[in-house]
Image 1: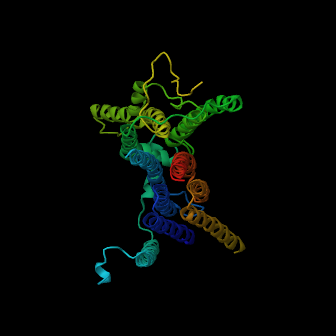
Image 2: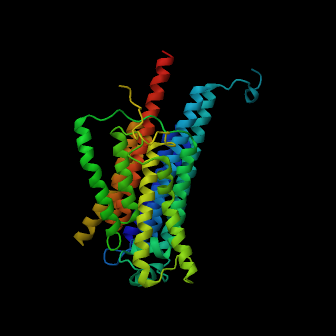
Image 3: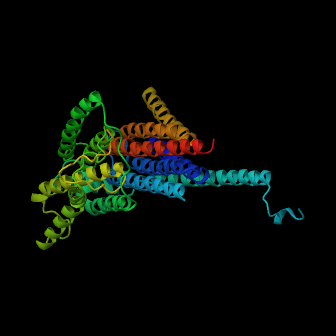
Length: 94
Length: 248
Length: 92
């Protein structure tokens, strides 16, 4: 229980840190990194919930959710970065 | 300047001050949010152990055709999630392609890097195949295998091939939809035999899951490599697979 | 008892390093540095998840989250650096 609380709390801190950075920092790349850290915080909470001590096997359902989430996060990151690059290009042309 | 509130030109010092106040307010609000969420999380943990999904999920793993519980959840209990996730990956790549052609590649690698690449890339592909197979009973599976294939693509692009070693556009399109296509066809085929969408009969489950995972691995690998290329493949003649991006 | 304390210490070290890396990645104004720190953060996260008995997810995070995500971000950082250099050349 202590480990769950400790790791889950750390995940929530990552979540808040990511949102703060996303709102405060201007450049797109920093916003993308901030969003990824927010996502990592959510994943971290899910993994902490799935952990059931060193003796019992962990809950596989949140693990599968996180696995799906990682791939979705990376595809969103790729799209955001390339959209940003194209916007930059069109700004340069204008 | 008559009334500072309606000043036409914002005073930079005041603007900076307001900016700082806003940031402070934001930090306070977010700290409150964090404390509230932590309190709720702690309460939820202390609420006691209700009957949990984990035991149910673990108990029925022998019927799913695989021994790794995570693969069982991904490809059997919650196969819909994985299908939709492949669709999201495909949609993201369509978005990337619709934003324009790929930027130029990197300069072609020298003999040392090229030699290393010719060793590492086949190794990565073999490791991907291993990852796919081992996912049935140990940590691994389609995502990790697909990531290894994608990494092979990244290395090939870094070594100078602007298309990251991917085939032509038509073949790429087929490979990209392969995951969703095979997944949906298996689901519909099972429906046709009266089993329900993606409800595998236990005897066939292992092979159906392996089929879906193989298709998904290829699709994920190609999608990740194509996302790194960062645009629609540039048109090349089929006789010359290496476009002449580099000047002599 | 000592074993429990040692384990708690181990957890604390893991988590403090994790949060420190995240903070460093978020606070770094230089794009390339921020991305490097983010990759380090992703790899460390994979380590923490291995500690929580989630090896599948740890593998995926190390390969996809830190590896490919990092590669995409490094490419973006390179573009940003080049754009900044061009701006500097255009307006000396």
